[in-house]
Image 1 (tube, rainbow, N blue to C red):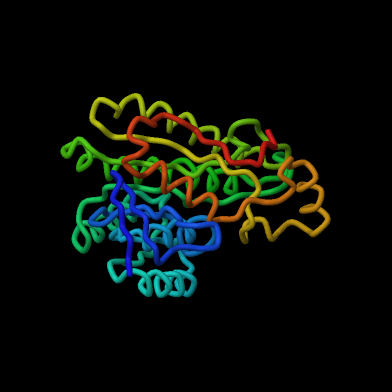
Image 2 (cartoon, helix red, strand yellow):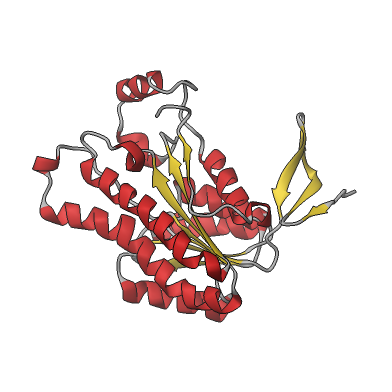
Length: 271
């Protein structure tokens, strides 16, 4: 037996209760959502949450076909209205092809989540110029490419939502992650500037600046490095991908209709 109470862009579903009571699940039925870099980690968690919320969903990976297929299988178990796309977001033509496929199969994109990103830990002086270029191409140009390609349809409809997945290092910078920090700082300002430009068209643009998150990206850290990082976090733990996803869901829903141009930081009070 199902209890459902519709509230703007969300509903409560008795099937999703736990010991703490009724969980709020968002309803994105008939909304087309594209999550880049979504075969694993934060992107996967975001995609799964949208799948459970009835969205028409497109996920993406640059090359990891097996991981993409596995995540797509998990998503389709929740929601059959989903597709997976291999494509490099730093390549405008590949982005163009992916978005064309989404429009042909699912419809115009209503919500874009620019999650694709890569990192590098090491001294700036030791980096090769190709490594520098690759990080900037994916982390900032990739978000610009996808945003540029979805906006004509959003502007016509006077409605749409773009959420960029950023990092706390884009706010404060990090030694030995200089280029990554710079790319996320650029993403934060891209978010704020684009939000101002698009607000008159009814399109919202926000970013989520993540702290340390329990994903494969941080598996390169030794157990000692992780422990040292946790010591600096007042909440004394890494965030879970699902915690990031829940924030993204709220920012994408109609209840956040006046929130735009914001960089929401989820770092456990670290900075």
